[in-house]
Amino acid sequence: MMECSPCRWLKEKRGSRDVVLVVVFITLLMDNMVFTVVVPIIPSFLYGIEHKNGNTTVGLTASSSASKVSFASIYSLYENTTILSDQSNYKGINNKTQEAPKNSSCDKETSILQHENIQVGLLISIKTIVQLLVNPIVGLITNRVGFDIPLFAGFIILFFSTLIFAFADSYWLMFLARSVQGAGSSLSTVAGLGMLAQIYPDDYERGKAMGIALGGLAFGTIIGPPFGSLMYNFVGKASPFLVLAALTLLCGALQLCMLRFDKFVPGSIPPTSYLSLLKDPYIVVAGGALCIDYLSFGVLDPTLPIWMLETMCSSDWELGLAFLPSSIVYLLCTNLFGILSYKMGRWLCALVGMIIMGIGLLSVPLASSLFGLIGPNVAIGIALGMVDASIMPIMGQLVDLRHTSAYGGIYTITEIAICMGYALGPLCGGAIAEAIGFPWLMMISGSLCIIYCPLCLLLRNPPAKEEKMAILSQECPMETKTYTDQ
Image 1: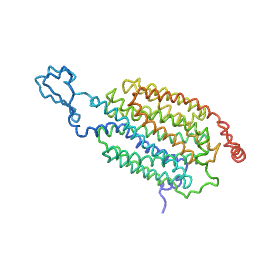
Image 2: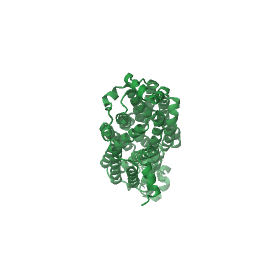
Image 3: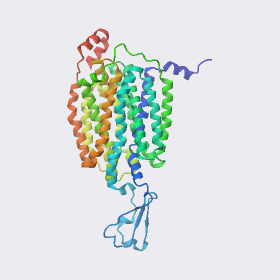
């Protein structure tokens, strides 16, 4: 029987570099959608749990001057109405107690919101804590079995964690779902980035491919918070997760169709150990830049929505839209600087990105409305895109220059650096915001980025080890020329 055109095309393209890039792009997109969709949902969800027995009616405290009048107003959060117990005294009441608040977020108790800083920070950071613990194991697995099987295993774990999210009705069930997601994200990210580094050996092409793949990460970050907040506000808590579970199934089907799952043959030269990689000062500096960058960005996830509830009386859907400018700009910059960082110097791109991150964080507390947050968030998105698009290829270049060209270990260390930053950020950020306030937290985070950025100068011209340079000069003259130009 003659094969149909789509089947013939699928057979020809299966396992090609472009197809693998598309699969990694979609995998990172889905992983980060599930990762960010809960950010605007968690504060309102936890507040609802705290007031589970008192959501129907909440008494408003009258002022001392109005307390002498026989009047009581009861505001219903559910119906958004005010009930007057004595209409005859209506005229003698202060205007503030005559009308229902336009936004129920303004009536949320500040003490509970302050306490939520720690709870939300722990719930957000537990995913990266688990990912941090699992990453070294995944690196060893990819060196033994290749990248295809771990990538598909990550999809399976991500699907089940999304279902747990959908039906979780308590804090600890969401905590469990977030923890399971961390294991799946570790498999997907380490395997995906390692696969791209392996199939794109040229430094320029690798940087371009990494930028496109990180665009999937950025796109998931863009649509995750607004999608979650809108679906949660108008449909219900389970709706965004059920939709994501269905999309994750389609992603798994795409992996089955496009990846080869061939038997993996390890290289003749054993990969460099984690300890040797961690002793390399250039790898430590590059990993530190990623860690500081994501730590500074991670403090915003639990604290910015709560600060908006306290100071701007923001609604649920506004909490998700607050992250939209940084996510859109991050998507554009990862693709743009995937090419530009090679031409301008990746070390310079990372250095400038960290300075912009510091300025953006210092500007966040100056905003007094949702529109005032656009400028700082745009700066933060540009900075994240510049640092990611430059450091990711630098990691592959460093292991080619100074170690064995096996990429499971180096991108495990890359993910460990990101996870350390994104675990410490929400966890410490929530505690610091509760202790000394959100503006001081932003000042500390922004200053940390600016102080660290001069270390990126060390990445300007990393030297190759003598034995590695000898091998490159004899066997791979084109690669040696590429690195010399860079």
